[in-house]
Image (cartoon, rainbow, N blue to C red):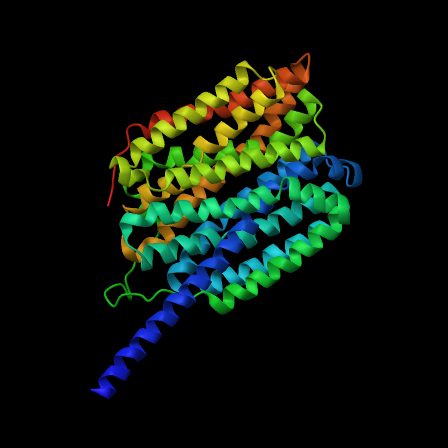
Amino acid sequence: MGGLTQLVLGFRRCANRTAADMKIGIFVLVLGYMLSQFYRAFLAVLTPVLKTDVGAQPDDLSLASGLWFLTFALMQLPVGWALDKIGPRRTASVLLALGGAGGAAVFAMAQTPMHINIAMAMIGVGCSPVLMASYYIFARNFSVAIFATLASSILALGIFGNIASSLPLTWASEAFGWRETLFALGALTLIVAIALFIFVKDPEIAANEQGSKGSVLDLLKMPALWLIIPMMFVNYATVAGIRGLWIGPYLGDVYGSDAGAIGTAALIMGIAMVVGNFAYGPLDRVFGTRKWVVFWGNLMGAGAVILLVIYPAQSLWMSVALLAAIGFFGSSFAMLIAHSRSLFPAHLMGRGVTLMNLFGIGGAGIMQSLSGRVHNAAMAGATDATQAYQTLFGFFGVVLLVGTFIYMFSQDRTD
């Protein structure tokens, strides 16, 4: 009896250690995703100093931000293959160390807008596996019924990195210099990458999945995905474009806001995104639907964008409130992943979630780049900056409405 008791206790201790290791691994993945959120949004706050020190104009930063999203998106296919074949531990840690930490160092040494473009492309590569590594682990190790809640929670926690790219970054760059701040962030990124390698555990693959064949092409042959993909393409693009790039120029050009006011507005929008992600998480279980949660949320988000077109300069705080509404209602990314994830076969889970992320982040990258051209064209024919931003926000609003309309005909799916 004593030996049996010790054996049972041993299994319990092993299970406890395994659970503890998993929690530490997920915690480190959250830190990595915070860095990813930071890097995709910090250009908006550094707009004034980069213009002065590097000669980067808004259209230069639009291109640089777009390159981050495009390289991030293009990496999703190889990342998906790597998650299924070699696991999240090595995939996330190696890419974050080389691309994330290396790109931050290149950014800190930038002398021209081209250097910023190179740095942002490198950082996009480095950040590309972190969120999907988390989703892969969630899909493999946890109940499918709570996937949306877990996915939304890590998004919400990660957005604290987005918040750090607002007022905290403003304070740090003013106190220590923006180059020194970027060097420190590069060092922090390297530390997180090393922690990923040490603490993240690869999920076990079931015996009946080993040797299973398939590719992204098998996923693209699924008709149900093609009505979800357009929504995936535009959902995050609006929030990422406005929060990550245009909130700074908009408030500066229309209201004459300084760096502190822009940082505060970016902080408010970032907090709204955190709250939005937590709010979306359990709604599929509350209402018994994923499709209509996403549909009505994005319709309300599009409404907030259209109001910003109609009232672009009514008052600073009204504009900030509408920006916060866009951030809140536009936080349905994880619910969309959960909707599509329910269609994927288990052996293609990594490639499935990264395929949808490709469309989500790729859409954001394309919209970032196009938004710069839209703004420049609008400025050429506008009598003042306000009219140009009306055109810009109209562009975001119409694209979001089109994606939402197509999504209305998609097949609902819950677990």
